[in-house]
Image 1 (cartoon, helix red, strand yellow):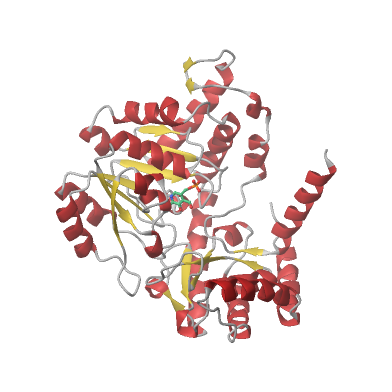
Image 2: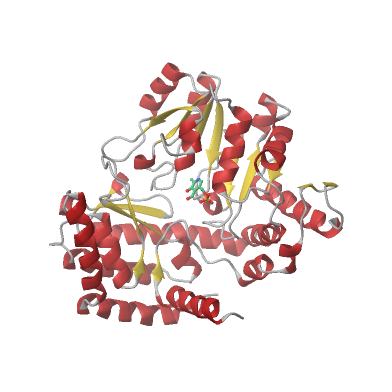
Amino acid sequence: MDKRITQLLAQEEKRQRETINLIPSENYASKQVRNLVGSIFANKYSEGYPGRRYYQGNTIVDQVENLAVERAKKLFGVPHANVQPYSGSPANSAVLFVLCDTESTIMGMELASGGHLTHGHPGITFSGKYFNSVQFGTDKSGLIDYDAVGRLAKKVKPKVMIIGTTAYPLILDWQKFAQIANSVGAYLVADIAHVAGLVVSGVYPNPVPYAHIITTTTHKSLRGPRGAIVMVTDKGIAKDPDLPTKIDRAVFPGLQGGPHDNTTAGIAQALYEASQASFRKYAKKIVENAKVLAKTLQNGSVELVGGGTDSHLILVDLSPQGLSGNVVSEAMEAAGIVSNRNSVPGDTSPFYPSGIRLGTPAVTTRGMGVAEMKQIGEWILSVIRHVGGEKLSNDPKERTKFLKDYRERITKDKFLKKISQDVKNLCKKFPLL
Ligand SMILES: Cc1ncc(COP(=O)(O)O)c(C=O)c1O
């Protein structure tokens, strides 16, 4: 194997092994899933769908895709599933291309309040540029005001409401969103990318009875390979019996070429894993761990958006301390705790936000529990206190220079180095799969 890439792989393995991963959208797929993604299924081309391919030699791949589709249908309780989207963003693109034309109004939650870019983020994304996108946010405490969403829907009459979150710690009320969508005749698309593993385990509300279409990634709490699934519910088929065919055509040939058969095989394996009783226990533990971590941070006087968590995710608001997400997330990384900076309600720049986003799917996969969450919470609190005086200027030039110097300083910081050593010792007790 090439030396350079071997070196980089070893470095990344070491990084993953020796640090605590609190990025809520990441996870550790099982060895079986990873083996399938790296398997000879990667060699095959199979444009089309099982039984209707443009290439010969697909007898086995057809069975792999059918297996993944049947498992998705059974696990989520839906009559139609397409497992071919390359990832979550193409899955949402396919759905919007089916339901909308360029005159259509779509409604979604804004990025700064926890929505995703593909839900109509204006200016720079296809969903915000090619459709008439209207967005709603949260109130000052970070909660969705369903009455305000309803009033906005009545005013703008969206064709589609695409609802899901990437940085919202509380649960969504699918029934309320369905009532709003139904009242204006809109399609309700539930994007459960972040919480799919929790949904199939019964620890997060299931949108299947309420939405017409469900999209999800397969690599977050579902713990599969990087990929996505688009599903049509009974309600969706009742609204438009051709919806399954339209979705399939939008994915291929509308948006994509050949599916990644190696990923499809990995998805089939991940769906098998997610249907086991042990996975349901895992999902329950994810939420328990998130609640313990949240409480530990709150006990240390740190403010959380939404006042806590009902899911796998915690959004820390650092504005009361006058701190930026950049300063804290960089220092946490120097201490061996990997997170990401994130906007909190009221922020204007996603690049220099006042929050950090934390999640427990990955640490829970490693087998960590209550005691470890308390310890990790205490480490985060001590990092926040340690960098309390590090203020980021609003001036762009000063800010860039500060961050460059700051990065150099914190990698040599003895206090953070000591935590990173303690983190390494903890990680040794919870080896990666
Ligand atoms: C809610 C939601 N939808 C869609 C996506 C897009 O997924 P991908 O990054 O696989 O394109 C994400 C990714 O974070 C997400 O959080």
